[in-house]
Image 1: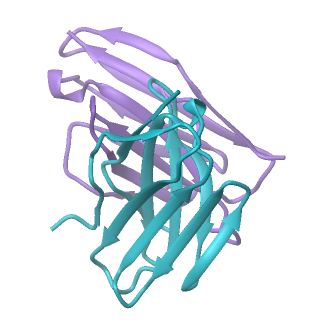
Image 2: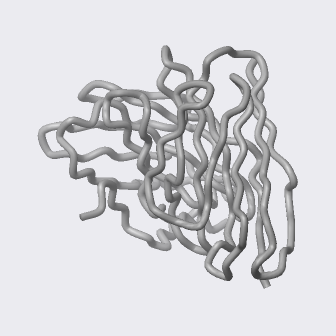
Image 3: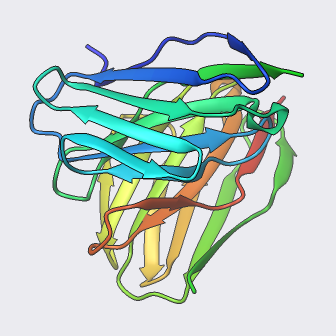
Length: 111
Length: 112
């Protein structure tokens, strides 16, 4: 069973729209949750981290966590073509020693 | 500020040849260090992680090994490469306080 699951996409949204990316995880002991952006051929870069239930906003990005449903999401407001990338969800099992990643969702923002 | 570097960035190796990828972290002490592999169009597979010098944990049995000879140095090795070892190798570090993971630039390995 995969620890972290994401829809592979591609998810296509028009410029200026809200992009919604979703992720589920299997281990209820998971403590920390992260979203990474990866451009083609590049290494992942951290966008958001979230540790408690609810919403966390940073600029155009909002991360949402629901531990009861084992669900974490990322909303990107006012999507730009430069947001076109693969978005990876990652989960840490609470001991800061292991980070598990989903396979990523490819986002295409159309001008 | 903390930085992480890994090299080489790109390499093409014949089947059966050895491999050595190196990673160093600057600006922090006693980091947790990781090696991940990303096959084409796939997610990140955790290969090894280390919480200190000489302490290596392997996630999956494979043709690779890792070593941590110094606090901020992490090395990925193989004695004989297989075709299936091709991929994008990523070194990463995390601090015990923040719990966030940061990646190096990556090393793209093609085994022919």
